[in-house]
Amino acid sequence: MEFDKIIEKIKDILSLEVGEKKVLNKDVAKALGITPEHLSMLKKRNKIPFEELAYFCAKRKISLNWILFDQQIENIAKETEKFAKIRYFKDINASAGGGAINFEENYEILYIDKKIIDKDLDAINVIGDSMEPTIKDGSIIFIDRTDKNIQNGGIFVVSTPAGIFVKRVNLRSDGKIELISDNKIYPSETVEEAKIVGKVIKIMN
Image 1 (cartoon, rainbow, N blue to C red):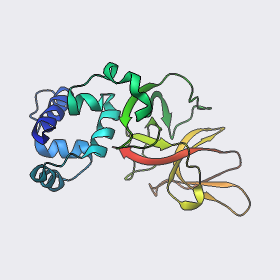
Image 2 (cartoon, rainbow, N blue to C red; image 1 turned 60 degrees about the horizontal axis):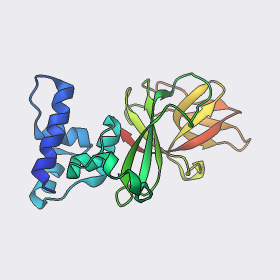
Image 3 (tube, rainbow, N blue to C red; image 1 turned 45 degrees about the vertical axis):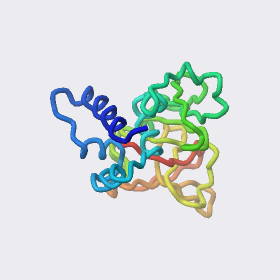
């Protein structure tokens, strides 16, 4: 597993996204969600940013094993108990109207070694700017559906009769749920009927 070979693969992937523009190390760092300085430090130490790579691959529906070992998913399918799953629901958008959310169909699966990510996650798209600058329009968020404890704070995906939202959540003393946007031009909203889908643990802007 050579650092430079992995970086070149990432550049090849990014070059398909940007067309004629040359892909630099700073573009790789941005795609991985780290600083160019951090990437340079990792390169000197030949230390692979496994978790960042996992989310990079999940966003693009690419096998992490292909990036690391040129290994296709078919070759590891018999050992899926060793892998966590990220289910990507490309047709589901958060922070927009749309009614109920169906986590049982129309998803694509990416397998991730449990040594990197030790739990199954769901991934959905975000549209709108109500959570900027934390979550940008067009981002993909990764959700831990086993964590619905809003008392500890954080950002959650919430299903309401008005649609699916990604917001900070506050449980009021009267039992109602307050949905809070990071973008201060949007006022908080209070809802009586809300289902906490899960906590956002990773954002790919």
